[in-house]
Image 1 (cartoon, rainbow, N blue to C red):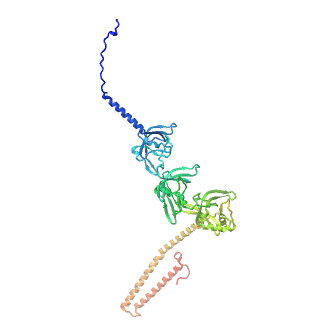
Image 2 (tube, helix red, strand yellow; image 1 turned 60 degrees about the vertical axis):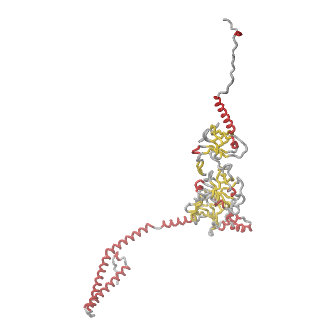
Amino acid sequence: MSEINLDELPAPNVHRHKRGRPSAIWIVPIIAIAAGAALAIRTYLRAGPTIHITFESAEGLEVGKSDVRYKNVPVGKITEIGISDDLDQIVATVELNRGAAKLAVSDTKFWVERPRVGVGGVSGLGTLLSGAYIGVDVGTSADTTDHFVGLEKPPGVTHDQRGKKFRLLAHDAGSLAIRSPVYLKRQQVGSITELALTADGKSVEIEIFIDAPYDKDVTETAVFWNSSGMDVTLDAAGLRVDTQSLTTVIAGGIAFGFRDPAHTGAPAADNTRFTLFEDRARAMAKPDTEKLALAIRFDEPLRGVAAATTLIDFQGVQIGNVDDVRLGYDAATHGFYTDVAATVYPRRLGAAYDALIAEGAPTGRSGPEMLQALVGRGLRAQLRSANLLTGSFFIALTLEPNAKKLTVAMKDGAWTVPSERGGTDQIQDQVASIVAKIDRIPFDAIGNDVHDATHAASSLMGHIDRDVVPDTKKLVGEAEIAVEALRDGLAAIRDNVAAPDSPIQQAARTTLDELGRAAFSLRGLGEYLKQHPESLLRGRDSGPEPH
């Protein structure tokens, strides 16, 4: 095959075409790219920080649907829900809006808003239609963070609420709970926001929030008390029921006031601590500046006496409460006894205690020593009934002028008072004595005598009905015949005007004589029966006949 000579080939004829306009089909993708870029830029500009919130449960939360709301305004959305590494909690990843970046501070609080029914009312009903969402309470800290621990329920107080927080220390919480109301003059002015045991576990610390402007009414002299339930009092004045509202009866509540409304003092500072009293009476009582231990030994059972509830009464004045009741045994007498330990406040006696102190001053004896000296004057402790309906008791300290003179010294600084049976015990003893006397009455013998007397009376009535009544009826009939004859005789005298010696007059006189003798006999019989009624049963004795 011969080789081709390239040089012999003819030169190509090249024609160059002019470039035209781009095809219209490229406009659509260009617009799409531009729109996507604009959307990406807008999303980037609007995007805020991404935060992670841990909750106990993801109930009601949905990725891409559940959002984050501040004051019910959406400020972010859940983009992912996962489980923590320890499998104990869920972690919700939230993308906040760019304008909501200030929410990501360390003291911001998050919670899941769901329908709730509680002491404070019903909340979250809107989520029945819109679904659950994450609520936000924006903090005031300057430290930012992207990890938060969510609350299981909304906080009692949000950072934007105006008012003050105060802390109350109570022996126990009773029926109080978070969101229980706080009252001033029966008007709700706040609520309980937190309730927890103290570090030593002996008391309960309660945090309350008082809304503005009522927070200024909480002064340094304010006193708080537990107003839960109803205070029912039954005494000589009648039945009284005291309660703040129906809410406090069901869910508990707290009230506060002042011992001296004329001197309330300055407004208390935020987080000031107060004592929560058990009731209004204890809150309004004047503080006791002096206390004294009291020791009493009883040789009788003390059913109904209990610590903190049984009162100590001195001549009608409540001066203390029982602290402890202990049962003891005396090996020498082989008997049981009960020791009562109480705390009394002598200053509650007022001017009487001041007079005792003045009386003991010349001899150098103190007030407690003068109280102890009253034992030598007949001071005794008695258990008395406080309420017959409830069966409660109180211990009365009273002067008994006929009591045996005793000299008892104070023991370990405690006012020692002997006891004696009295009050209810005396009534019980008297009742027992009466019952014993009643038991000695021979009711059986009396019943037998009554039975015999009833039988004899029945026999007497039978004899009267059988023998006496017929004779009496016969006698009465004869008397009626005699009276009729007399009437006829008188009529004949009136009609005939007979002479005095006429047969009619003689018959009339004879009839009258017989009638007189019959009446005399009836009178004698009546007198005899009156003096000897037993003759109706045994018959007439052999004695002289009645005249």
